[in-house]
Image 1 (cartoon, helix red, strand yellow):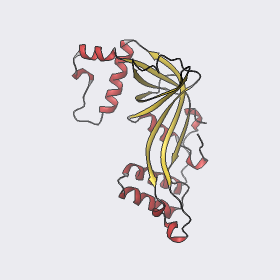
Image 2 (cartoon, rainbow, N blue to C red):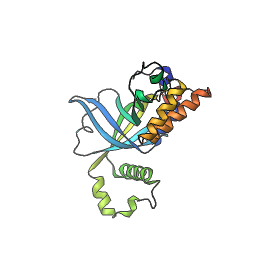
Image 3 (cartoon, rainbow, N blue to C red):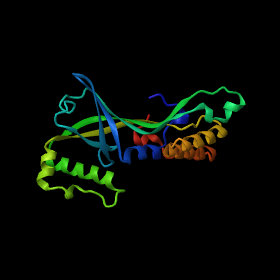
Image 4 (cartoon, rainbow, N blue to C red):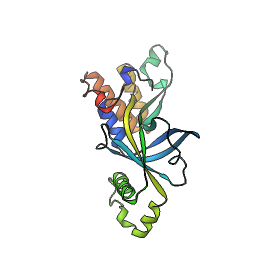
Amino acid sequence: MYTPEHFAASPSAIQELLTGPSAANLVTMTGQGMLATLLPFVYDPTVGELGALHTHLARNNIQWSEPAIGESMAIIQGPDAYISPSWYAAKAEHGRVVPTWNYTTAHVYGTLTIHDDPAWLGAHVRALTNLNESEREPPWTVDDAPDKYILGQLKAIVGVELIITRIDAKTKLSQNRPEADVHGVIAGLQTCGHSQMAAQVEQASIAARNSAPRLPSLKNLGVR
């Protein structure tokens, strides 16, 4: 992934992409060509040196049964939004502005392990459910459904573990724009209802103004 230095993701940004409730596109190269499926996942930091993404595929999905050739990749997409040049103070000053797109994303590379035993699958769906239900009141749990029903559902899926070997991550949040332009971007995003992206742009701007030292090296997350 092309990542200029000023758009390189910090370890905290990478951690947020890995640990927040989210889904990722799992991409594998196989003898049948490239296969991809959008899947919800849970990050487990205890596996290997860099952790692992745990997810599952429908048993009828051939992606799990087609051996992956080389590394596989999960593409995690954070908030993204169109940035209008009309929001920039520079538009009124000289007009030399164009549209762009802000986003946060991580390309997580690793090796695949397939899990087809009820114990692993049961623990996985509980962890996945708990992660996504954590802010609900009251949260739904797997125990709310009949055991026999859950066992039947588990038979219809196959567990997938992506053991992470490296991560490429990028946070493109208007860090390359003058401060006046950034203020315009934040206001424009808030007006359009993109509050999450506006907050991230504001956080990136504050970090840049304060010249905050970088967090510990990205090497410990396998980031190039």
